[in-house]
Length: 262
Image (cartoon, rainbow, N blue to C red; front, side, top):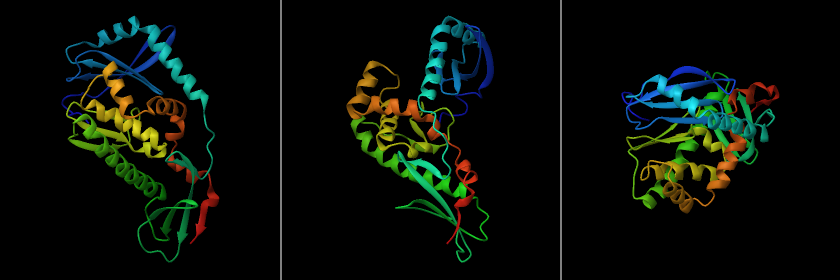
């Protein structure tokens, strides 16, 4: 992530565009060279160089009103394409619907243990355990994500002749990955829920940014040359974001009969 001195805390703003009240985050960045707007599924983010004023952001949004509204509508359509019903006890893991079972054991004295088996993912909890099984599951998923991401980064970096300063696996709400001005790569741990080709695309995307910081034609040609599944992965992400953002807690709450005895 970028140095805190380089990016100030974002402020919440709102503006009327095409008769719609649009809320957006406004961030002043010391590293940004030009004003940028990013439209995500649940977020409009305006990044402003520190030399520009907040009113410049509002003026820019008004000038690009049609584009902003079109992007918001596009995100709504993608969300509606496959709005999955929550299924108790099931989550995605590496793109596959996977059963999650919690076992309570009177004899198990160790910390919660998470394992992947032929029947799905099991969380073994001792009767005296104070750790929420949801926390144990998320920590396990984060470790799986970190291991897979580090392997892919090691595979990809020789292809662009660049290496990151650091790799972080985090829980961002609006980004799947990021390449900072300091050469640090960060990824969302929830990518381990997606198919391997999606994870490979996101890692490729950020690794290529180490060599090409913009989204120019050269950037996209490089990404596609390294990851031929780029377009397929982007379509999958657009259609399945809700499935990746599922609250793990709901898996346990909605399926009370998952409490078994080991």
